[in-house]
Each structure stands twice: as structure tokens, then as C-alpha cells.
Length: 151
Image: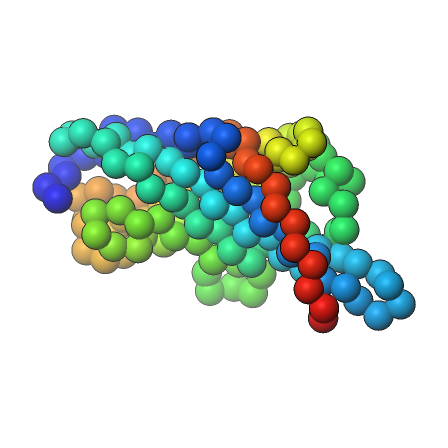
């Protein structure tokens, strides 16, 4: 794919998924040990557009109820520091790293979450120097899927 310039990256709302993994702890206490986000995006470039997904894994929140963090923002370190969010987006035939350093929980309505995310997408990691690094802020609405696991 010969892509000289990325024009924009936009989320495709309503088609993504937020998986909340709840671990059961001793004495019946439950906490969210991690959250995974799958965010469908459309990347528009000089030769057209491609649809793909930004994957963000290992988001630690330490709460059992997402409603308790509505309106709050959380800062995260980036690779290689402990607590980073493992992120990537498949584009131009490679997995490109995504550093997500801030997530704000805007609202939770039924089985949907509205989030604001700040990310830096590194298209240079696998050699696409001309695509550079993109500093992006996304507003997304994602369906919530909860799963419980024993710790």
C-alpha cells in the first residue's frame, strides 16, 4: 500500500467493545483487574480509507463498578514503564504501537461507555517513517461486555 500522508483517524462509534474483566478476590470482594478496549477506526489517507481497530489491553482501574469513575480521568505511563496500556493498530500491513496515556470516563448508559482517550500512534515503528507519529484524542462510545474470573 503506497500511502504518503494520513489525513485523519476517526472512530466508528457504536461498533467497538469495552471488555471489563472482574476478578473475584478472597472474602467475596470484587475488583476490576483489567479492561480491554477494541475501538474501530477509519484511517483516511492520500489513497482512500481503511477500517481497522485500535486495541488497548491491560487497563487497570481497581474498581468493581464503572459508574463510580464516571467523569474521572486516569493517567497511564507509556512503554516501558510499569502500568502502561498495551496498545496497537494494524495498518499498512504492520501492527503499529499505540501509547494511550489518558482515559476519561464521560458516561455509562446501560451497556455503553462513552470515553475520551489521548493516544500517540507510532507509524514509524515498523519503518513507515513518512507516516510519522500521530497525537490523537478520540471520543468513543463502546458496548460493555463483562466477564468474571477467579484470581
